[in-house]
Image (cartoon, rainbow, N blue to C red):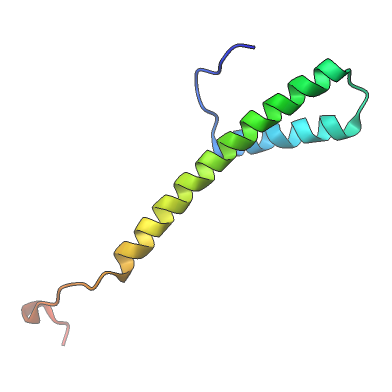
Length: 79
């Protein structure tokens, strides 16, 4: 199987993973086909986890920045 040149977006990976799961649950596949689909599903799940982990890091950084005390300058006070 050729290595993918470009990482799919989270949405693309999730959609394809959903399709893989549906095909595996439907059955009627040979053992070899099932194994290939399983392996593809594992790769797609890893891609989704990577995207989600990146989102968690960005969210944590944004929340930390938001909670940092902002320096107050009496000249810029609104009142």
